[in-house]
Length: 277
Ligand code: PAF
Image 1: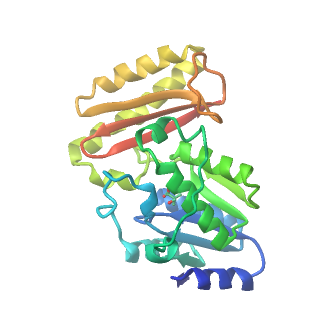
Image 2: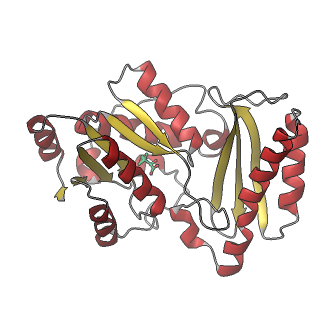
């Protein structure tokens, strides 16, 4: 496994190597969910590149960029264990020099859900992902379904800008009690960690109600809300049942529908979702 720290070197490697590149963009502090993406990339491409870049432009002014967890030596060990070929770790100074002026704005699907709570977040995500795609020129790029809106935004950007790659979406990897793996879970204290299982429980409830024939979205949202409110450490930010492509809220559940929620437990805002098909 080779570590690459400059854009010029990453481009040179891409120019010199023929064949499919699988790409796994990350912000580091890797967990089994990331490894799952890298494993899938390795199974489907002869060469796999992962990137580690804590992208400053996707953090809001009140969000803790400096405090974002980082552990590059551990990340490198993990990526090596799944036979990643290259790890691209660019500097913020090179990605965003003082003269930097170009942004990718995906309209509409970025205005709801996380976009409504975190203005500018998806502008930062779309911009950095477009830059990384241009530098790495992957054949396929791998993202986790856990960040459902990010997946919708990136797919839209790739389609609208005619980018020449395939976006592969991988199922959310979960802990034994169903909690979706996330770097944010490290912020949870032991009692909060236990309480966090309520997110997945509420999604399973939504799935059960849907399977039993419930199609009224508000009824499902209400029952999810009631379940979560029984957990005193949980503070609901939002519960959404939306069209999985436009992200418009639904009155009547029509598949594929994205059931997503954000619940604050202690310090972190925890995200999770399932798709009703
Ligand atoms: O999902 C993430 O870790 C980030 O949003 C991404 C896609 C690496 C862009 O910074």
